Image (cartoon, rainbow over all chains, first blue to last red; front, side):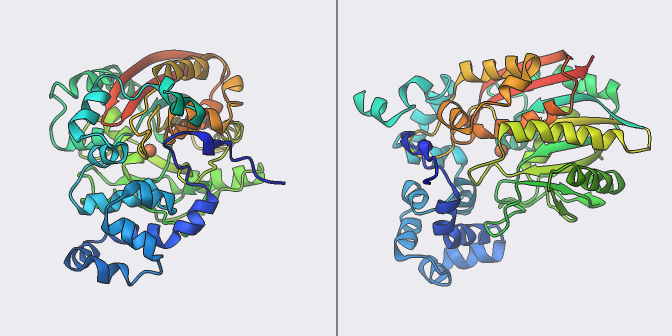
Amino acid sequence: MALDKSYRDIPGTTIFDADMARQGFALNQFSLSLMKAPNRERFKADERAYLDEWPMTEEQKQAVLARDYNRMMALGGNIYFLAKIFSTDGLSFQYAAATMTGMSQDEYRDMMLAGGRSPAESQHKEESSDG
Amino acid sequence: MARINASVYSSHVPAIGAAIDNDKTGEDYWKPLFAGYEYSKQWIVEQKPDVVLLVYNDHATAFDANFVPTFAIATGEEFQPADEGWGPRPVPVVKGHPQLAAHIAQSVIQDDFDLTVIHNLDVDHGLTVPLSLMFGQPEAWPCLVIPIAVNVVLYPPPSGGRCYALGKALRRAVESFDEDLNVQIWGTGGMSHQLQGPRAGLINQAFDNAFLDCLVTDPETLAKKPHIDYVRLAGSEGIELVMWLIARGAMNDDVEQKHRFYHVPASNTAVGHLILENR
Ligand SMILES: [Fe+2]
């Protein structure tokens, strides 16, 4: 019997389940390697060469080079692992979250100060396409 | 014998730790948040816990993608604040209680909870931010801490019901330990937040406040809330809240609420905080 994956209809959200973790394993381990300063230095010196040391797909490597976090998550990345990439870039969680929403950092910060994204707007994919 | 007398619940947002470490607690953005913990700092000085069972989750810090224990307990002498990519937090080393931790591990495994047993564990903001919120910036933490790590990163985390039942098993374990100890259990993480994807920034104040109400008065019902409700209504990272059920499960059904606080936002997250004592 198929597993219940009803969370797939939550708009704008990728749930990091065991199947995603399997696909994203090398991407996530690469990200984690950036917690060590010498690895950060090597990555910054030549991103492509550092990425080529990891058994990642070409798509995953391109997503990292483009800092496309939504794409990285679609390919099995998890945000807590990917956080090591934007930390290496010297960027905050709020900055990274803003880029994933397509908002500027100021717009995103103002939304949070005003109480965050409304839960009413975004619970099911059908609803979000209505409005 | 050892006894669990009280429980503390709190979000563990990393930006709160950064605000404390960088002396920003007096800034307008942070003032209301820290005001919500003033009572708690007084309260804990009077309570003087000997040991805190600190339920938290690791955020891709000590656990990589290769090992994902659903529930784990750490039995080491001490735990270093982890380097999460920008240097370790400037906070004291966390001292464990190896004998009690080993006792708990053996007791709960025989009680049908198959905990992973860890010796050395670097502890990230999930564990150290609540300590900072409750104790401020001491030279040394004034109590021993047993880390209890829960997977909430890889879906699915343990169910609410399983977390609640683990709390009950932890209580039985503590109460079968001969030494007289004043033990607290803390549940951390949450409240509503989503850190990823186009829906990042989600906050659900109605969900959070209903959760706080229900945790105090009807945890049995709350423990039945399915995962999908958390992720849909409280955001993909809001599911951390299942960890609060472990602490609540270790308490009496009938508790006294000593303190309650709620604030939006801390960075991307809604902050909730409760102190409950057994009646
Ligand atoms: Fe967390």
